[in-house]
Image 1 (cartoon, rainbow, N blue to C red):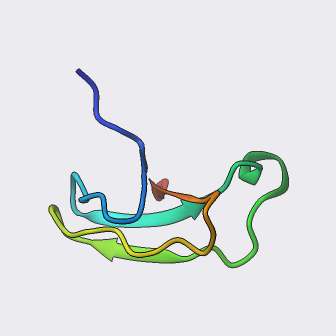
Image 2 (cartoon, rainbow, N blue to C red; image 1 turned 30 degrees about the horizontal axis):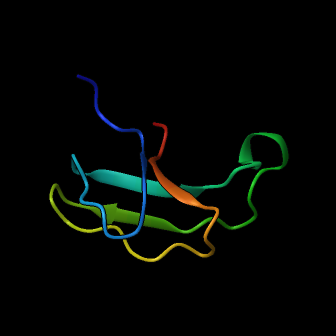
Length: 60
């Protein structure tokens, strides 16, 4: 079974790393100044800017 790639507020980080907010239309329009957080494995994700956004692992 694979690992989830999108996370909500309150979910726990599966791995250490930097995570960034992504939105429904972020692939088409982009998000200006998205929130970024650095989490260790097991830490909870913070609140999103709005209800349509999710956390994803920041590309290297």
